[in-house]
Image 1: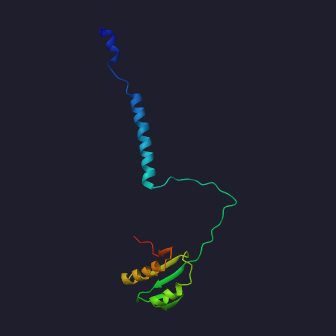
Image 2: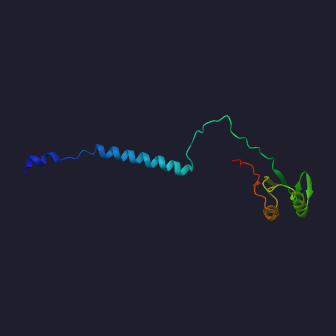
Image 3: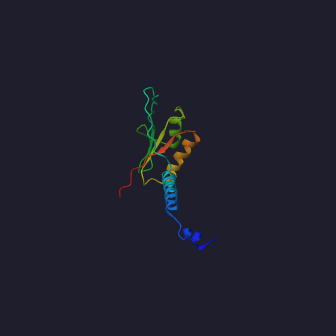
Length: 131
């Protein structure tokens, strides 16, 4: 090989390599944003015959600041609450509303009762924190 033949390889064209790296970076960043949000945004199609699910109104159990349990607007004991909820369907949602100053143990006792009775949909109502 002569020096004249080797002169063509003095510099390397890096433009195609940069293009490939930018495409790979775009793919990584796009995939990372889907992983970070946990979902891929999808605009679902509409159908005229979508079955409408009837939402059941939840059974509300309240605990006031004095630690009294209320169901249906009446103060009840833990045993009385168990008797009142015995006739409810286990699929019906239960909403627990407890004052923030109530002893945590009382709220846990009510939740244990609901779990023991095998209610499937339990929720604790909270308020949005004000900054």
